[in-house]
Image 1 (cartoon, helix red, strand yellow):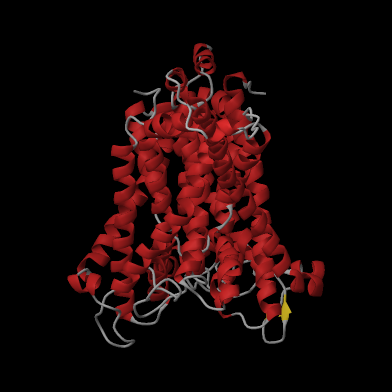
Image 2 (cartoon, one colour; image 1 turned 30 degrees about the vertical axis):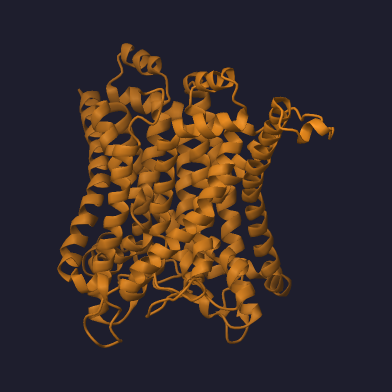
Length: 278
Length: 329
């Protein structure tokens, strides 16, 4: 009898653990919609931040800044990750791929603030000022390992019969990779790229001393720029009530973007990417 | 890859089928080279990262030596830099986070791997993965405006009332501090513990469960005494992985830890962590010594996460690879 009771108690406790964990997400989402929803207006997306002390204004520059940073991150990180992944899956021998794989996992685990220090040393110190470029480099470095490992694993999922088929038709290796294997794995690779970008879109720490912040538009790529995550941090820790309200609204926009990307990519793109499953 | 011997014959330049074939073989070599360069770039970036952290922290390393790690004072004006309060804060908040997140995550993983029907299990794992994708600054936002007031008015007084005899739960309730930072961290790392533990639990062979059930064990007994021990190395791996995340987590901690370089036995006390001091002081650090002390803190953080990640991956690989062969001992 005691054993059955214990069984029932412990098993329901594990259920409670899941309920707690899962409900956190819905709670966060609900709380942000409740607090941030009322401050979302057209102005929020089209106006610059109001001068300190004045109510109103928007975050247009932060939204554009975030997009610019993501564009740089993609330009810098995706080609390296993609080609590196192709190397690991198609060309690699034994020792170099092992080393690259291990290093990629290591780089993936490096705290984002340390990546920020690195980008600071790499870009900000030689240029002597903060810039969009430095922020893009920091985010780009964070994109590389994810894209690389993901590309490799999806390329490996492509059945070897496809490769042999294209060899049999007389294609050589690069042609086989470029026209047969890569297209076959393209959905999976795209999933990885989008998820990696969604992840760095919410990163604040590596931008604090690379892209820094800016209350105005940031022309070109060499000036400091505002970005959504950094402005949420600045506004949430600032002293003004109006700033706090705007931080909620910005938080809702950021979380919305990240979650929508994740859900869409995971449910639509990720379907049928694996050859074993289909 | 076999390299074609490239004797430059006049035929190479001619537009004959044979020359074309040879050139395309060359294209294979070029493709190989380009992708190799991309892969090597990753190695180069990582090497450069370590090199920069090492070189730029040289000034602080030579000036303070090992004393850096045992000195309590952090006084940029006087040029005195000691890392102890930050290391302490990082370790304490991570310990609190693990104490809360490991039972929650492993318990949840047991439910998802052993009890839930596959469909429910995969959709709940999906939600947990989404939780892992929520940006850190969002957790910080909720921490500052929601958790801190609740801690101050409700949770901390209650803890003081019931467990106040422990030195951990003494002192004034500010709301901010080690405990609050630990709780926010716990919420952030639960998804990692949960999804990795679920994977390793699922890797345990079915016969083991069935054998235990056939011997008359209840579902819980078969899970707790057979499946969990068989997967324990992988579960440790997931814990190390989560710990590495917690150590390096910046924004959410910075926003709720109180940012006060203090060492106190009480979890209610405001503190500081390595990542938080970097976030707060790096962009306004004046003077080379100040900057190099901060970069040395970054180096410490890097080394800590490096070791933990390496260990975690090793443990997870060991369990999932052995999978079915693991016997409880």
